[in-house]
Image 1 (tube, rainbow, N blue to C red):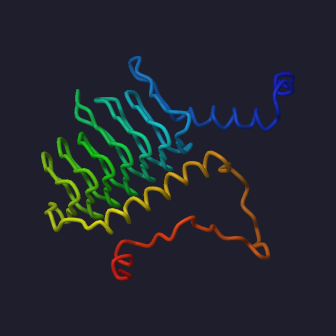
Image 2 (spheres, rainbow, N blue to C red):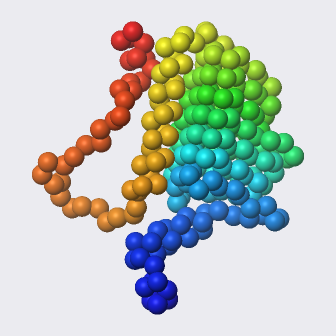
Image 3 (cartoon, rainbow, N blue to C red):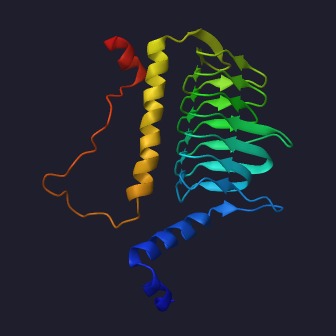
Length: 225
């Protein structure tokens, strides 16, 4: 093993070990192996099972559970699936999150279609055969029942959800900027995230993350406008 290490850089070998460890949470079932584009970032604590296709530039957060053991799960380019989300599907069906989809912390996506550039808020639930329209938003904690159709560029809230209003151009621009932050996070994680031991003291002049764009929560953004 040490001779093998000498043939490549120590840093390269460490990257290989991290990749191998990450794959420990990726599971084959009945011959179906997940497909993960190499430009996607999948956290080591996410679980990916079976008939799952993860496209370029995607972000899959810690403790996400993406189970393709009944139906196919398709996650297209630039999608973010945040921490503790659950994706699953009805037997024989497809669950699809189209390009630039944005799935907030703790959301459950089950057997539905999230169309291009749509956002599902934190801890929302979207059920079988529902369709969330292009550039639409599902509010946090909302319940989208089976078969529900949210039109393009509309906001749905509540449990069960109701269509509240049409989204403005500023609302859609806000959503797009938030998604770009996660796409940038994908690149940051691939470049620099690694397990470490914590510090025991706060260092002097501890730096802060500096966002590349001025993104505020939606309610704050609307107040400013």
